[in-house]
Image 1 (tube, rainbow, N blue to C red):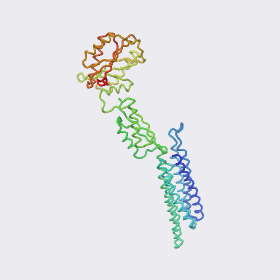
Image 2: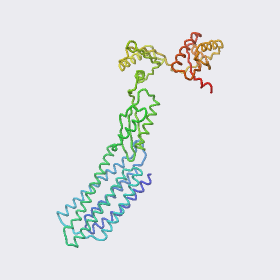
Image 3: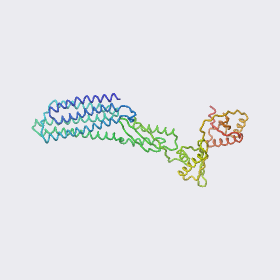
Image 4: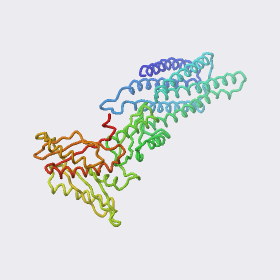
Length: 464
């Protein structure tokens, strides 16, 4: 890409050198303002081509510590300089035309060489414009696109000059002196075309330098992102361009109950949505938690806890005569004192009541969350205790099998873990109820047991 961009820019410079020299020689020899204005225009082309060559060399450099968005703005700035040069050329042409009309008349002697040079100029400008535009479109280069637009107008301005010279020749042969002013009109026409090109370049370069978003792009991005699953809303979209590279910065609202991993998945989907509009854009997605319209009271309770970096579980809500009573379990670091833990819970409950005024009362069961990895003192192999526990499991018809029973002693307390098989179609609520009842019966049968953990498994899983 870099080699092709530099090659077409260098070719443009060499062609501009030749055509500028030819136009200047013919313009001086004939005294034609039209050709002299075209020579000035071509000299401007040469300056613009040199600026373009420099900009494509610099703009393709990768980003570094001092230029973290790359060097693409150099292309935009070079187009801005071309605009200034175009306006200076227009000012000179208009000044020279007024001077010739008001101060003195310069005799014009059109020659065959003048017409030949102008026709050669048209062919070279058409060739340069096509080559520049092809590469500009291929690599989305604003500097090359501006250069191509610049040279395409040279074709029309050179045509106007040829017409002006032809009218001067016709006036000499027909004895119509007023047609001599056609050359001056041709020069002013060149200036008019140049002003038109300058205005277009000015709008493009100023928009790029001021980070104006391309028309309609923001709306398309919002529509694409809003369709992604998990996106509650699109709160901000900012787009900027540096050279041929776009940068998109988005803030999207996600349900506050989603996990960090899920938010990352949504961010990747949002990035893909932006790439459907701007394929090579550098995208940064910022996700913000928001309450969704589909939240129930359980989601809202957990949302308040999550906002405080806490996790509640076993949440239950009871309607006591139109007044809601909430019960929940909250695990806190075991190293906290009771006073610190209670203060934290009090603040959490107050915030829940403020956000959910329909709640009349909250009861929070505080549990200690282990902060260290435990090492069992020993693994118990007590066949008598195991037989008693298995007999308890047979009291429950829903339990089809109890296996992988393990007893360990941790800090002088017995921990029990086991796997229980249940029917595939048994509801999760019923499985939970049976597990709770099992835990109670295990502790009744063997009072020494401090903690019970039961892993439920479907019937088909144990038949594999």
